[in-house]
Length: 341
Image 1 (cartoon, rainbow, N blue to C red):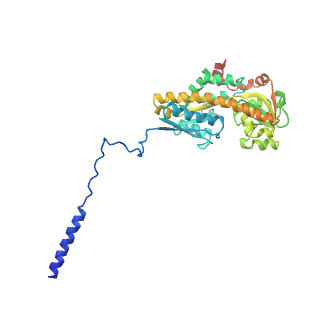
Image 2: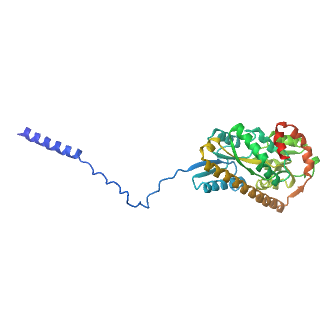
Image 3: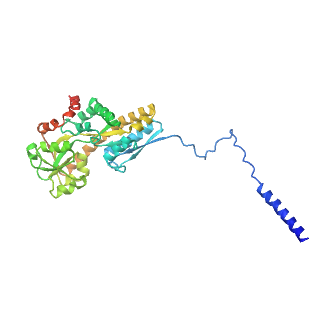
């Protein structure tokens, strides 16, 4: 009897188990295609192309302001289909590293002050006394001269030069002895960029070029390690160098541009419409950036004059004549110089 009862209990338990395992949820009713969309539901993301732009300068500088204007205009001109992320303060590396990234196609866009290590033709941009004033320089880079350099960059490296950004003219400033003419530079120790063209210029003017890290220039002038340095008005003011070198001689020896470049891989990935929009945004951003440069330089000059600095007008032709030998050292650049005549 006990065996029969146990057997009945086992059968009942198995039936319950099979019933539980066979239970399924009723399928959800299909959505009614005619029903209105839920306004609270997130919209499907559109396909947006994001480009990264590298710059080694800080917020508020004319170059970064130009970068940001470019990003704003690209978004506007493409209807939001292309957006640009500006990554400045040197976060993505120094200029040489960034140029390599552009050439490799691992970075999309960059603003670089000196592209000569990547394309030697751009050494011409560092030749002394190449232009007489800011307007002449801008016109040259907007014209055949700038186009020829851009073509060489593309041919030699594949890099696309979208446009040029500009800085103010660089001039000499000193701590104790003002520079009124070339003769005053004899034997002077002046901080120089570690660049062969710049060093050749210093030698031609009779000065001793002294390469020093930019961050150490203030202390080097203050402690008499060097007699002075050279830069544009904005850098002269924002660096505080005017505090230790109050004599600013307006020789305007160098007016060099920055290149505003794009990876060839990125360029080729864009549609023709997007390429046109990017080129237009770059050209318009360049016009904006040079306006900012002019304003910032005027403001900086007024500030250092108000602080008691002496601005010295020199005979630029005298300096230009002294540096004629520098041009002789770079005959391969003559083809570009000829475009300025």
